[in-house]
Each structure stands twice: as C-alpha cells, then as structure tokens.
Length: 224
Ligand code: C5P
Image (cartoon, rainbow, N blue to C red; front, side, top):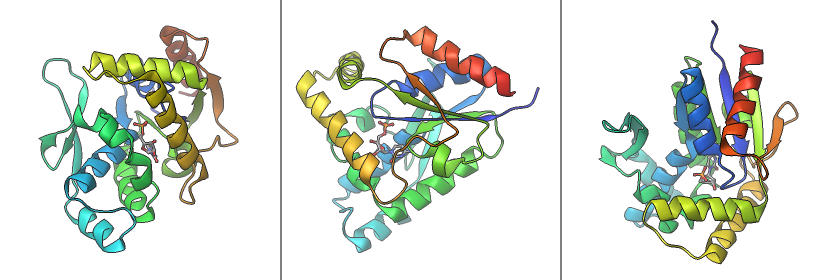
C-alpha cells in the first residue's frame, strides 16, 4: 500500500497534536510535532537570552540549534531533544508558550525549521501538525486537514493537559495565551496560519477524541 503525507494545521490548543499522534499510530505512520520544534527553538533562545528582534542574536542562536526526536523507552512516545537534552516537559510550560509566537515570526528561524521538517517528511508515511504544513512545508500533501474548535473548549482542554503535567494555570490565562497566539500566528508576514483551499475543515468542538481521529483516518484511507 502506498504511503501519503498528512498535514494537520489549525489554531492553538484544538487538539492537533494528540489527534495527529493517534492518526499516525492507527496508520503505522511517523508523527512529527512541528510546534515542538518552534517551542524547542524558543527555549534555546530564551536560555541564551537571545532576542527574536535582533538579527545578530537570531544568527548566533541558529548556529548551535539541534532539535531531534527520540522515543521514550517506557511509553514509546516521541520526545523532543534540544542539543541532546530532553526538553519535552519544559517546552510545554507557560514560560515557552508565552514567547513562542514571537520567535515563530522570524523568517530565518522558520526557514531553518521548515528545511528540517521537509527532510523529516521526505519518505512519506508522515503525519505532521502545525500552522503552515499544508501551505508551506508540504504543499503537495495528499491529505490536508484544518482543525478548529471554539476558544472555551480549547482553553479547557489545554488546562487539563497542563494539570496532567503538574502545572496548574488559571483558565483565563490560558484563554488569553491561546487568543494571543492565534492573533500573532494568523497575522504574521511569514507563512501565516490559514486554511488552504484544498484542506478539509474539521470543527472538533462537539466531537469526541475518538470521532475526530476516525474522521481523519477515514479521509486518509480514501487517499492511500
Ligand atoms: O502547535 P503548538 O501550539 O505547540 O505550537 C506552538 C507555536 O509554534 C504556535 O503558536 C506558533 O507560533 C508556532 N508554530 C508555527 N508553525 C508551525 C507550528 C508551530 O508557527 N508549523
């Protein structure tokens, strides 16, 4: 059976990552979390006190930025490594969430990460989620999905996720962060978040997790 590329884009916190992960598992595909790469890059720049608006800082930060994924030996889940260090937990913190969209706006950072993402997807059999996967990273993807959900639902789901990770954050703060990231991601000059014409839109506000996964697997099977 042939393998395809599945691009899943959408607003912050609408369950793209967990859905994409489950779709990849069902199809026996590789899951790649492009947001984790922007988050890891952001952590790298923050740790080095490098500013996204200073071109010298951007250049210097990109010189020693290495992002890789390795499976956790217990869960088998892919985890994110920054220059050899496991940063899976740290990149999901509010400290990173609050700044990631400022770094993701920078052309040079995007160029570097898009090139890495395209290398990772070269062999097909890949599910990648993000903001510009269907528009820029894999414009020829056989299946493009644009996921949405209303802001209250997204904020609640994200709060549950953070609680599971041991971080208790006020719902209003999460809502403000998601809204702010949507705003920056949708209005930036470089590869803004948008629904491309050939993407299938799925509003997950009233879908269970199993339903949203099944819908995408079904769409994929029609294209394999
Ligand atoms: O997917 P996640 O919410 O973890 O992404 C974090 C941030 O990374 C987004 O808000 C966006 O600013 C940036 N991002 C991006 N392009 C992608 C994936 C993520 O700009 N393909």
